[in-house]
Image 1 (cartoon, rainbow, N blue to C red):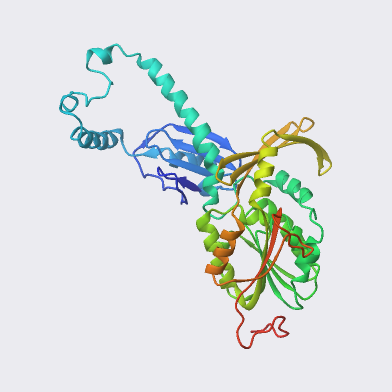
Image 2 (image 1 turned 135 degrees about the vertical axis):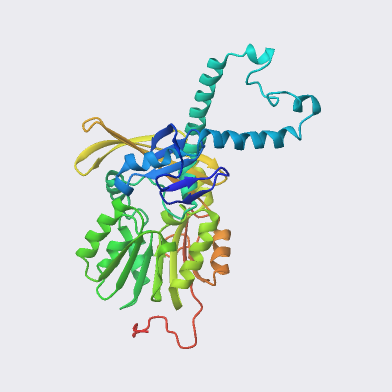
Length: 407
């Protein structure tokens, strides 16, 4: 469960206990991708309940706890104290107003106010606030936790697995070329298993996969069960992963890094440096700022096409909305009239320049060893892609491909 604070920050929070307040207040509820946005209309608390959560007896029990709050009298007293502080800073003639200088009744002007109209407009404005500010920014806020936006389900996982093919020439050969026999390999953000499958087919490796999305985990567990090598799947985010062994190779694809905010990117590179053995390798793939800006400009007008997902035809609508400097919401709508299904998925994409990425890696103690513009080894000016390979500084006794991994 997530709680959105008044300053716009978002934190993971525990379900409030029963009895935290003496009254139950109306809840504003809105279904958004991945869960339910819940607002206590009297205390102004904002929560996001994930679809996967079933704490303390189910969704209804969660909602009943979120509806609780202190008595109206306690809130009114708090409001009166706030009003007194405000009045003390107001001009003299307003401070003397018996109702605090606010048009809520008690004078001729207030008596002429249309309170029913005011309440209707306030409700409409509140709904607009939720729609355009809170709900639309939720994927952005969730990025700060270092996790994907809460939009993945079985349908989207199947669509993504089908879409995530070897689009760029030589990609799988590149990932495989980074391995030595008996290496320990860590993939962060394994997703639907595109890279994972290539490593799982290489006998002798010890493969660990980090992935937070339940819909993807079932696919990764299938890979693990049929693998030619040892595969461990960690269900969670990288910040919660216990680094108990040193890895020879850490990899992540571009669609993982773009889901992190700046603070989480710093944590990520520090984590990678901690997870690697001296001489160990970290490799990643980034799309360039220029390429993302070009795609955002092209896809302001949605692209619509048809595809087959698990034997069923779906109409796909794909568009990109820019919500900040080099920050985009990629929206994918899957629609099937036959199944009477229409689902909307939002993937936040925070793109960073190559220079900033190199600075973060260097600050974490990683040294750039190779920089390419594709998986075939080329390096051109103004590329669409950056393929980067870093190394943790090597010790005097380390080897590039050690034969004894027991240490």
